[in-house]
Amino acid sequence: MIEAAKIWNEPNNKSHWDLLIDPDWAMFAGLAIAAGKAIRSTRPALPIVLGGISPIDPSFMRNMQRRGVLDHFDAVAVHGFPLDWNLWQIGEWPAKLEEIKAVTTLPVWVTEVGVSSFGAEEVQAWGLSRTAELLIGRAPRIHWYSLYDLPSAWEATTRHKEAEGSSYYRHFHMGLLREDGTPKAAADLFGAYAPAMGLCQWFHFEDHRLDDAVHWMRRLGVTHLRTGLSWADSFRPNALAWFDRQMEALAEFQVTVTFCFTPEHRGIEPHHTSPPLDVNEFADFCASMVDRYCTKTGVASAGTSADPPIREPTCVP
Image (cartoon, rainbow, N blue to C red; front, top):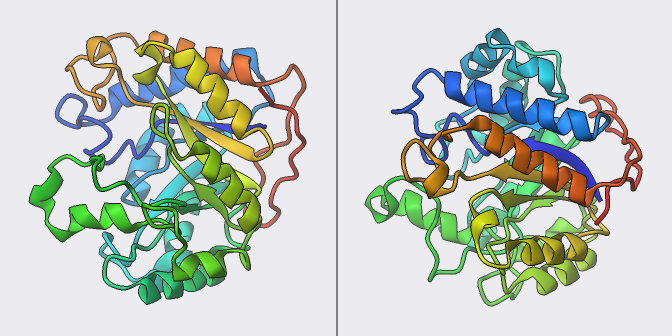
């Protein structure tokens, strides 16, 4: 089932939104409002979540508040990787949540948090346990990133690729499972924290890992999953068949679907991070996907940090 629709991914990160074109996020605000309205018009009760911010920046959230964006959302989200990329320590997680709670009354979800095994698998395992200790009970939804390591033959979604040094290569070691599907030490621990902690796993177009991922999520006791449907991928041949297959495979989980990635031919610049030429085209994509994969019935609220929401299986392929 779809439990929530999420608009964009890390909009304040230049690897995911072109800040040279839109330095004050005015265009992003227009996109977010259009998408929120479109989803609300087709599924009024479906929770809508603002794309997880990275870095965790209260000033960005205040900007969204001033521009009226948050009026169209039911929750906001943050991403944090203090043992790999952030310039703060893992023990600061509660304070980071409070920084965002201080500038919005909306629930604050943690839709990506993780630790790489780049240095050692033992570090990742310790980081998983410490993260669970710090976040469970403080956020209504937590998604560990990720189930799989990124295959070495693929590219990580960053701006400067290998020029980023070890920061780039850490992207390839975030999984509970290695590239070949074998478990790391952290995988043995994860079941102790599920279902209070869900997973974030992006599936690429016609991803060969989909069926095995479902098997592993069942084995680990996962109930909540965050994944994505790419606007850019929607222009590929057989795109709808792939979307159908993906969402059918994931139907047993409570899925937060992230909508993002601008098709090259529909951006101000030909890049997936570009603001679109027409935000209504993106909004229409979001609404059509929600309409395709949700039933007509309502869903529960986005919840609060004190009381995680109760979901009903109302949005299914």
